[in-house]
Image 1 (tube, rainbow, N blue to C red):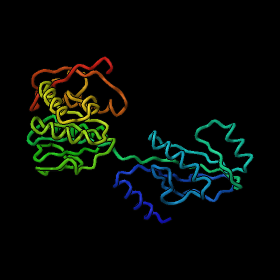
Image 2: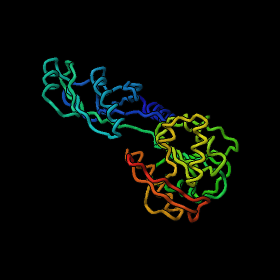
Image 3: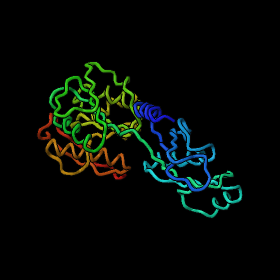
Image 4: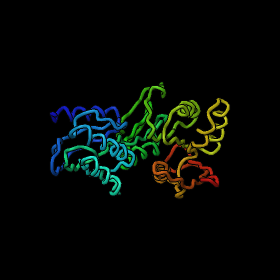
Length: 296
């Protein structure tokens, strides 16, 4: 396998934001078709899509390990024992180490394989309304600091730091944007674009949708979305009012509150939200929050 072909292949997967695993033979003991340095790329479905680590037997075992690595996001070294039928059965029944696997073959060797998952960066998608917005600006900065790929959809933003992607089409159609399940979307549209924006997002499968708005505007928007037939499940999951209870007042503090909400959702946590009335210092509109339900 030529290194440049391998690099080109994994770069194409990364550009398409496809998760994958690279399995690399790092050490062998005894007889094995695979040699140190052999590499294979495993798809999210557990298929070898490029390269080899030495034949069907070790590759079938590594495919399962690769899918587990994608689930956990953790790299590890896996030992693959290449044994005869009896020894493979005995090893499978007696060895409880999840990072060791026994496969039936006559090689009689042992392979140590480094299984490394590659997951696309989580994206923070900000939908703005144009003009100076300290919260929008702060979310770009803090989002990048936290490792998010930041995307701003705003026809005329005023930002002190460049996002990873900026879409400035005045009449941009959100339906043309390829959302991912791991996306966190924050709506900063401040008025008449709230409802059509949220209605479009209700048809997308993303991890988090939140909107910065006053309590009154949230109530009005939600009522209109109900009239438009937006599924109740989306409205119940909507983080609006957005942010967690940290006593935020300034725009910078609000940004921290919002990103805490995003990260908590990413990690499967549900933190209490707070009620803020009035205007947020340094922002164009106040951040109002509902009190959490008893199930929050």
